[in-house]
Image (cartoon, rainbow, N blue to C red; front, side, top):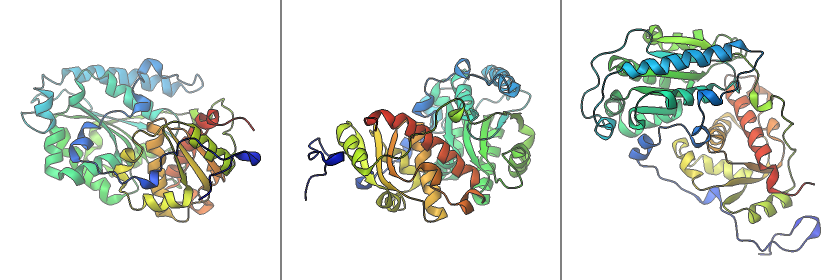
Length: 367
């Protein structure tokens, strides 16, 4: 096989071969799923003080104040025992449950900083990390699948706080499962915080997401205070447009020149994602410093599109830049998809991939 050529007729690329996501078959044990229920790396250092409210959106400033008070109130949750023992369900949960709502729901469109605020709440809650859990709805359902329902209840019942990002209201079966789980946890004295993805269309840009969320969690609605967070997607607020796609040659050269970069053709990667459970997409990207993709094209069907959304979320969480050739990311999903039931997920993926494309612009020379 001949060596790939440099752009503009340059010589062969002699840098070490990059990694390939398609060559990875990660296996994730259940104990890792539990241990990794913390804010993702992108949100390691976020705090309420680092959230910059839009001065034109007073609801953002109000939300920070309410959440700071909520976190402070969780210090009254009792004196839990050993974090390690309680993590796996041993020992007893505090008997005394503070009065008032035991949950907050952050309602708003994509890109207004809901995850930043949710992670800030996790960091601000006065409890050791082993007594706080943070994960997406998908990660929580994966935990139930790995541990079983009863063991998941025992595992999380000793926690002071459970944060659920991107609550999936578009999957009725999983919504009922998690709603039942949350009911058990509320009974055990666990405080809850959530953001959600909602079925759009009649909901517009999430304007009625709070009502939809509270209806779906049925008997738990009394435990939640809804906080509306208005605003535009901060990833595009005052920032330049994402760079257009690069050529195959530029992407290939950048992958060879960047330590820890992966290089994959888009079609084989989509096929590989179908063979890896979405709960393993985080492990799929372990150690990857940049993702380089050639031949990006519209995704062919909804199942493929939803898997790509999960991968985009994991890459965004880990701040992994994405350099690509082919079509720009805003043309990944068809008009039918962007007007359908999973519309908000697709727009979130476009927004996040666009941000990662900006991050990747330094990996190659300007054209």
